[in-house]
Length: 327
Ligand code: ADP
Ligand code: MG
Image (cartoon, rainbow, N blue to C red):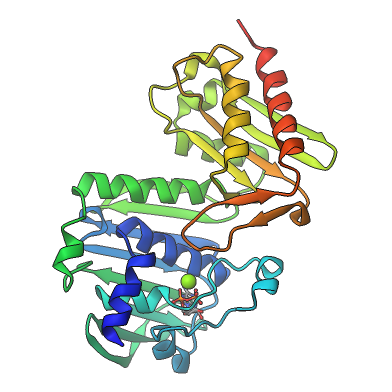
């Protein structure tokens, strides 16, 4: 079974950033409002995520590391309704099969909790008492220590950290209600307070995308036939040589989609962005019934029931906003 775990681990555990993504999704599923992410050497040496979520009962701790042990709804029909991010019950098992994992949790404010550790092939999870505030910490050390072939595919510390940073930023712009702290090699990288008022959102966008983005950004908020598009778009003067400041969310989820990409690109191209990449943070909201979210956990795809309507709405909303400021 351990070998099967290691093979299956490839599906979710590709690199440190994918570990972080799984851990953060678990924390959010547990209702966390604060995430502390501590990373060493691009996450290859150590990743630690601490949350203030509801925690895990002592007797459930060993189970959390077992394959297909999910405490969450696994009926696909219920999935979207519940909105839970994880559903397969294999992330922690997969991660622990290719790293040294320590899971510590407390359900209450006693300061006392419990911990299980697992290390590669060593399937037996050891349960012991540990000090911990309400919430959960997961520490993952020495990723791929027992799978040298996989370890070889890791890039430099800088590149791996870049992926982590991207993952954290993408999440940060979808959950303004959650405080997020990221440290790399002991140095603070992001220190994002929670807050959903417009000024608080704008402060976070400036922290994530840089103050120059916000200074050049137009705030937009448009609604038509049940579709709403809001967010911030940088004026042409702020276009980039890389497509590194492009965040698009559909009903709160970060997605990549052909219809969206095409409409957005077209709108920007028509307003003098030729050869440069626009920068934007945009949120499309629509009736959940008119969009299918691909439930494959590592993909971020959607299918619109009426792609044409969405395309036209996005194009005209953006085009109108941008044309107003055309030089
Ligand atoms: P899944 O998220 O698909 O259920 P995981 O392997 O990611 O599977 O997690 C297994 C289980 O461990 C979860 O269903 C949940 O009960 C528990 N768990 C993991 N991380 C946390 C966390 N941060 N807070 C509370 N419970 C957690
Ligand atoms: Mg999960």
